[in-house]
Length: 91
Image (cartoon, rainbow, N blue to C red; front, side, top):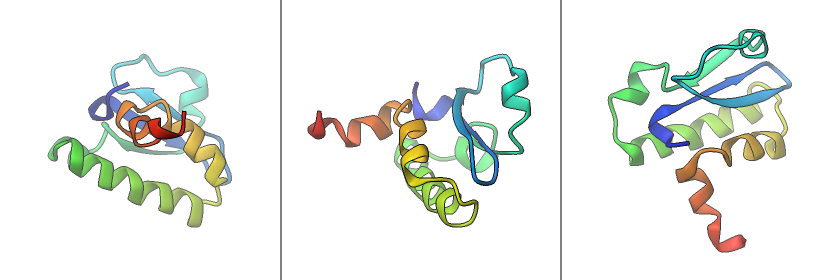
């Protein structure tokens, strides 16, 4: 999905999910207590480069402050096209 439409949902120590801002919320989504991304003004007021910086900052915040495994965050973020493209050389 495009970064502009990505909403990141997570709980302390996991799990983490990335969903489309336009998607209907599921019970699994509502069980996740934290959110960031397309549901925030800061995200919507910047361009894709700014969103990438916000996403990388969020990666650090979720792993350090919330104790979610970096591997789990990385796997979830791979569903975001712009994030995934950063690692395309590895495929």
